[in-house]
Length: 254
Image 1 (spheres, one colour):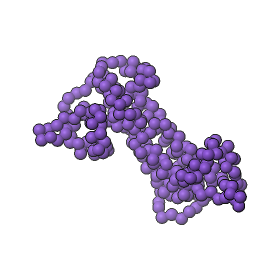
Image 2 (cartoon, helix red, strand yellow):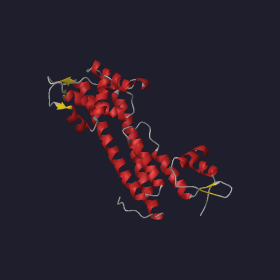
Image 3 (cartoon, one colour):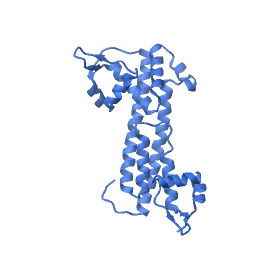
Image 4 (spheres, helix red, strand yellow):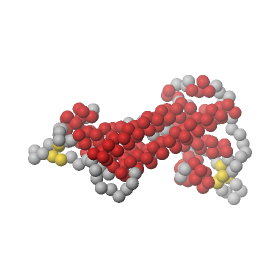
């Protein structure tokens, strides 16, 4: 079995030696044995796990717990619990697919609003119903309202009600938050969207990078999600190979 020093691992993986030690400390790689002189001894298994970790963390703008899930995959794989790792990868891919769907829907809503504007009417929902429909916590809805992202109407009994216009706005906000935009940036983009419903879409898309609009923000998110999905599929294949080569008993089924 070939072994490697810290400096050799750093060169192979393309990271600083201090990062090699950090990955060991936070549990991103399997336990590292040491020689009598205290030097760390790495193997090909460590190299492969380093590459899994690097690929999993190669994401730019994702929020909504996706980075947390990626870290969980890394740590579980590092423990050589490959069955559970595959389950986590599957959950991660499912969430990415959902975020892609949400982003595409947000682009469609924005395009329609730019052409037609908001329309009053439609079904009215309570806060609890909106929370379930959009998979957003009630605390998050309350936070967005407190920060001025949405103004919610109330019935005579004081209950908040959300119409179709509110739901569309919330779907856009949800996607922009996944793209890691601040609440103030989202508010600015929504205000720009509402200010001129007749604005030329091409003009909106062509705005300066530091003055992004909703469509370009969603496009950036879609690109990042697609890249993350591609990386996750590669990680899945690698974990399947590791599972075959480094068998470890497990009661879980992928």
